[in-house]
Image (cartoon, rainbow, N blue to C red; front, side, top):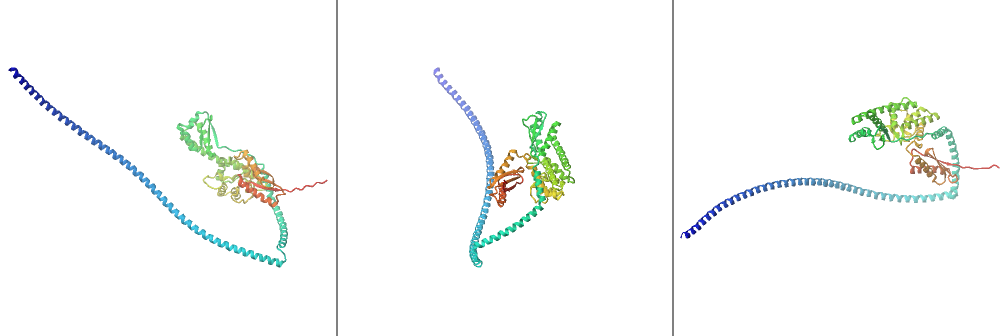
Length: 520
């Protein structure tokens, strides 16, 4: 019985304990679920907040990007609209111009049609008048033949005989006039012969280069000349306007410039800087400025020395200064001062030989190229610039005219002007005087002779006076006196069209008749 009661009691106790355990587990589970749900809800709320924040940030970024793109797009659209507007204006202007041109063309066509109609009417009138003139001429000829009793051929013969007699009388009169004129012009012709003789005695001259070489003690000095990151050489080139070439040439620096004065300033300045040893931008500018002032003073002294050397007096100081500038000017590689001194001497010698005032001639020869030293901003031929410049300082009228007319820009008014032109040609046209190699000089003379010999009836040609004159010997059987004059003009025209040469070339055609007899 006890066992039987114990078993149900144990079962009841087990059930009670199980129930109690289930109840406790249920409460703990509910609390865990609630806690988990609260945590999950909190996590979801946090995630929602984060998502909203991220969404808001992204939206802001998207809005900023969209605004930026929109601004760029609006700007691009505005630019394109402006371009389109400009193109529309251009098209509108072109359309207006086209309409104007079209109207103008229509007007021109109407005018041309009217002009053509008037021209046709005038042509018809002229044709009618020509027919009337021919008819009247035939009637007149018939009446004249009837009145004179001579045919037209007989009348022509008589008329030709009368014309020949009149021509002979006029020729005799012209021959007398020419003889009288030759006697009156004999002195002037003799002067020309003397000038041509002096031309053949002119000396050669050498040309100058466009670079200067400055010797240095050692190649280390090149680095100092260049300076840190090239600042010294840039400052030097900026101050002097000269290109400085520092290459592998041992112990030498090359200065390059077509302006001789700037190149001389650069050469002297660089030598002083090397000698002094202090080479930096401030020192470079100081030395260059000082050298410029010294060379300008030296130019004035050089001008005074030239004037004293030639024995000239009472010359304006500004003219003397520009004569000194000639030392740093060149023409085709020929030094302008040496050229002008030579022209002065030649002009003075020729004037003295011809009985003219030698000092006045030397003055004109010295100043003939003074226009080349005037500021390059002044436009015009150097002869006319020199003419105005010398006139400004009250030079002698003969000198002023010689300066302006030595390239025939104005008319010559005195024989001294012709002497200056001849002396200028002597000094400039000799082989070596200017930048013209001997080979090209000889080739030019050969071409001149070949060109003159290409005409029919020419026997021989000679280029003389350094190509300033070509003498053409013709065959007298084929070329008469009238044809000789025509031939000289044709040769001169062909030379002008086909050759390049300084100054002018004189064409002399010689027609010689020789008759030989033998005494036995």
